[in-house]
Image (cartoon, rainbow, N blue to C red):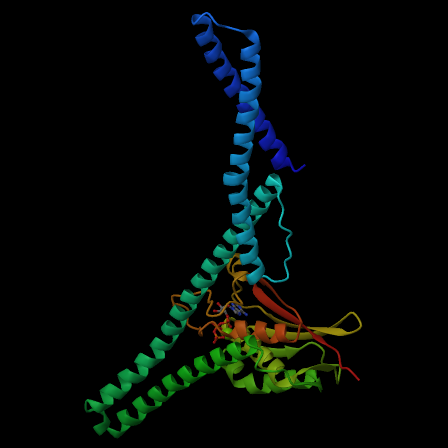
Length: 350
Ligand SMILES: Nc1ncnc2c1ncn2[C@@H]1O[C@H](COP(=O)(O)OP(=O)(O)OP(=O)(O)O)[C@@H](O)[C@H]1O
Ligand SMILES: [Mg+2]
């Protein structure tokens, strides 16, 4: 017998007992005043009224309460199995089980709603960020072109200067759109990794060469610790890893102090992996920002008061690329002292 049936029987018995007791009492008093009180009649009446009341209650409970609750439960389970076909929950007649299942279901739905709300928040913030990031260079370009059209273009020197600035603004727009496009492609798995075996030390030297001028402007020294080693072959997407190194080194220069250093080291991690560290002695990052650094558009200084700054997409791309390789990236930074970004890569495969 299910616990619901047990409870409903107990309920019907108590109710029937009380009802028959009250009715018998009323009948006995009535018969007493009519001078025809008979204990046998009262007892027989008590028995019959108990049985009748019990049956009526039991029937009503089953028909009107239990059947309805069970129907609600079945409907919910059918709905659930449509949205989540793997779940195969048996339909039960146990009221305790039904109650616990329904409260589980309510909890699950609450979590789903919270997740949707968080996603919606993220989407709104993201769209707002895109608009904001595109607005600045777009207005710059529009400003220069309007000024030229308003007459400034008659001066060839101003014409050239303003066109160059407008061109820079367009470059910035293209840069943001390309970054966003890349993140989206990686997220949707459209952009497949093209992995090969290549020498990571050589790649680091190439990136150093590319960024030499940028570093020189801030008198920052770029150095590789493993200078004695000649080759270290990893298995990854060369172009993407170049992008990772470029983004990390550009950051170390952008947020580094004049006369500072950016040091790269490559060390083995177990038998099959390498860990590559990019360490600077720049301004560092306060603890409260660390957990959000890899989010799209996240910048430590949003006001733009700092002399250097981009759109906050660089580290998000870095993270996406490392994730796509199924590798890890770590950050260790101390405000005022410097930062270290490190990531792992698999060694060559034969
Ligand atoms: N090496 C570093 N030292 C100090 N702060 C850093 C360093 N690297 C990143 N940051 C902080 O993290 C934020 C996010 O970096 P990220 O590379 O994603 O964006 P960005 O450099 O502002 O723009 P983008 O790379 O898109 O041009 C930066 O705004 C900066 O404040
Ligand atoms: Mg950056």
